[in-house]
Each structure stands twice: as structure tokens, then as C-alpha cells.
Length: 80
Image 1: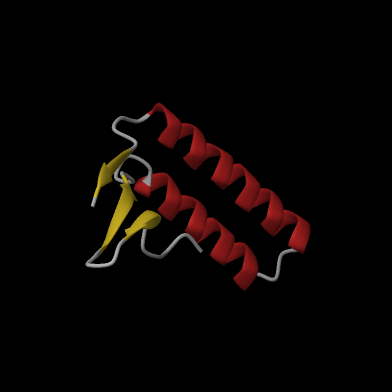
Image 2 (image 1 turned 60 degrees about the horizontal axis):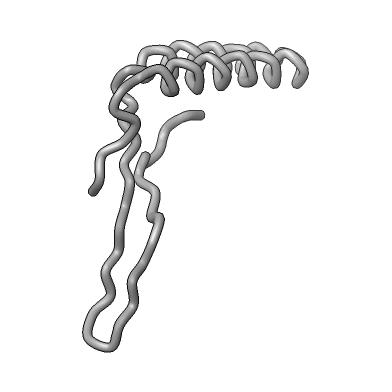
């Protein structure tokens, strides 16, 4: 559920001779453990055919925990 590339393109400078992109790569090492725990829990709920409400609540709790931990971590991102 949380898998994927964590790079976000944020800006492009276009010109006649070149295009220059800037990118930000969030630093996720501090929250990977929480992400894996909540991802496994959500997958188990789906496998056990738990109601959508339970799955949505688990996702909400997991997302809030990961976002909170991410906001407390430093640095937030590195330039790529």
C-alpha cells in the first residue's frame, strides 16, 4: 500500500538550450518501520475480508502515525 518511489519532481526551468529539473526525495528511513507494520495490518484486514470501515480506519491511523513521525524527523528531504 505504501510501496513506490519517493521522489517528487517539483520544478522545471525550460530554456532554448536546456531544460533543468529539480527534484526532492523525502527521507523515509525513520518511518519505514511504521509503514511496514501498518501496510501488513491493512493487507491482513483485506485478506480476512474485514469491512471497508475497518480498513479505512487502519489506513487513517497508519497515515497519521507515519505523517507525525515524518514531521518530527530531520532532515525532511534531500535534493536529487
